[in-house]
Image 1 (cartoon, rainbow, N blue to C red):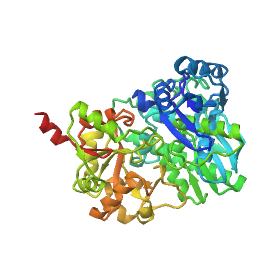
Image 2 (cartoon, one colour):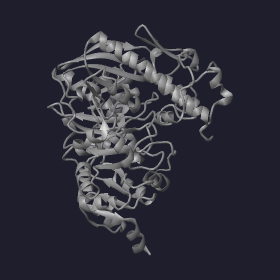
Image 3 (cartoon, rainbow, N blue to C red):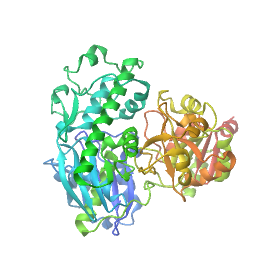
Image 4 (tube, rainbow, N blue to C red):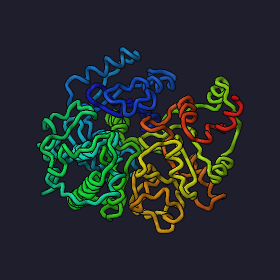
Amino acid sequence: MGLSGGPRGSHEPGVALVDEQGHVVYVYEEERFNRHKSSISCFPTCSLRSVLSRLSSHDNIINAAVPGITYTDMHLRWPLYLDHNFGLNLAVKPFHHQLCHAATAYYSSNLDEALIVCLDGLGDRASGIIALGLGDNIKIKKYLPLSSSVGQFWALICQYIGYDGLEDAYKTMGLAPYGSPKYDLSSIFSYSEQRLTLDTSFILNKYDFVSKHPSEPVYSSRFPHFLSPEQRRRSIDPIRKIDQDIAASAQHHLENILLQFFSDLQKEYQVRRLCFAGGVAMNSHFNGVLQSSGLFDSIFVPPFPGDSGLATGCAQLAYHHATGSRPKPLHSAYLGSDYSPSEISDLLDNVGISYRRTTHREVSQLLYQGSIVAMFQGRAECGPRALGARSILANPCIPGIKDKVNSLIKYRELYRPFAPVITLDALHRYFDVSSANCDYMSFAVQAKEHTRNLVPDVVHIDNTSRVQSAQPGTHIHHLLTCFSEFSRVPILLNTSFNLKGEPNVESPKDALRTFFSSGIEYLFISDFLICKASSALQSL
């Protein structure tokens, strides 16, 4: 069992289980269960309770592992927590935070040799790790110091343009194409002689990063004159041109530095396959630039590159430590909870909601006709992105569909893009993909010209799309196949099944609450279809 979280400013806590054959069998994320986005400074109590309810016996858990090897007290606090709340009497082995990221990157891939790079904000007093994956083993080459933190650089920029340094990191990336990279940020963050360097004088209290809440400022008064405190945008203020230009400058600077960094690493280690994780690997635009650079023949980013993957990395390391064998690669990202048709129908009957049985073909026809459909099918996907199990879907061929989804449901900033999901066999016909693994929506790649004309609402202003390729045998692939029979286009607009500021839905109750709190027109849940209009009419 892998566990992550705790009281030290941790975020995205959760629990993961690896079975005796080395397969990852459960990945449960705390925010989905307690409904607090990121669940900062929380133990994974709700998610662990749910996982344990799925097991025939708690005695099946033979060991546990956590990140936080440099914390002198957590190896004592975790066993007390497990015994007090769940009656689990387990020794808990700590591993290094960055090594856990490396494990999720390498052990989740099907590569038997790879360069492993993890770039992060901070964790266990480091900001990243460079390692080599060789067969069953991960060989650590070096840990990156806090003074090399790419994540802290990004958090500074996010806060300075009025965003949360943790939750809103992706907003800065999405805003960047609207601005011009006119500012030189090399005084804040630089790269020379194979060393990433963050000038810590720009950070409030220098190295005092530990236990900072994302709502607390991390920037000091020494920020450059064009980022003076008087000019800083507050979260309640409208976006200005200077904010767009700062975002563009930061993204441009990040990409230039990291391309040099990865190029030097590739030359040093002479490995053309890459496993990439850590919070910085959430920057899908950089990932797209990296895959198009030709530096690597294959790039794998796991579905949970940030801290939501730590529990899985811990479990994988514990398995390797106990058996000497390599854990099995991820067979799927659908490793969360599931609910049987009878559980769902009982709930619908109890609350008096009208429903009827449906098929993927009928739902695809509704999408083709312009309806917005929420999909709740099978096991939940792990990681921060909706991959078709807990998704809101729409027909991207309809002009203005993005605005409809935004105004009726998501209430997001207009500059933020929506992602496409496409059948795997059609991926290369519509998008320029070379070395990227697009299973988990981790790469913003160039959309081909006919794609931009055909489905513009899932193509960002810079002509990129954070595309997901759907694997055969999945619910979303089946739906896409049916949809393409009507539309001749195997692409759907895919966004997370949640409301603004909330985590993705976890339970059927969450799905119903979100459905009836928004402008979603249909809910496709298990074998059933709920139509909001008919439900409303019946209640009159």
